[in-house]
Length: 253
Picture 1 (cartoon, one colour):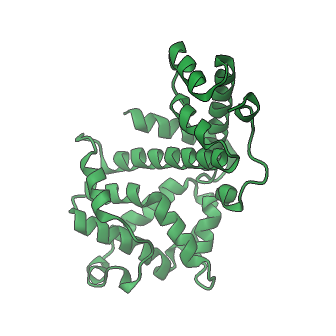
Picture 2: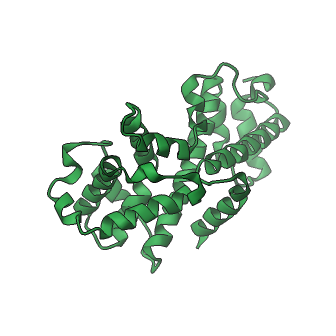
Picture 3: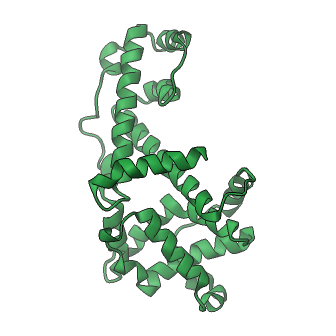
């Protein structure tokens, strides 16, 4: 690998899918709420794929068993699609995190939940979920006295970070630098000893200074992408920094 490859910036001519995430979460919500649109189901599936696990953990923390939590998570997204509730979404409501959790609480407390339980999802599947994997992941959660809301925020924060890393990986792969990403991803947010820089440089066949420069660019791009992802979940740009601080604080509590 050459220094030029290390110094490559955001890929030119990257696949369209690699940057499709720039569509805001609020625009996806509004598309999902338009039941007359053929994109409604696809939009809701995108929301489900990104955020079903934080919702699943909230439901589990409410005392539901794994099977009920799986059914309720799936039913919640079906309910959003069929009831038209998601159609009232508006960025002026504030953070998407708060909006979706409020809807979930309403869904769980609704008197019709017993009727919904008899026809989980109404025979429709929004997204095929790996329930066993979800429960295995949940069982690894720390046993703490944290409230269901706090655990939800923590899992939401992790989902945001996972999305950010995924987008960063897409960019590196699209520009033919997958090997570089895998080598440097461990330097993404923590300072490593100089020996680690030397080891990475040796494996990549470049100088240590080239590795340090590449790490600097990776971290800078990660920060930019994190802001983009968070921007999708808040109403105004002024809320981005506040939301990032809140989510990072939630993770260390």
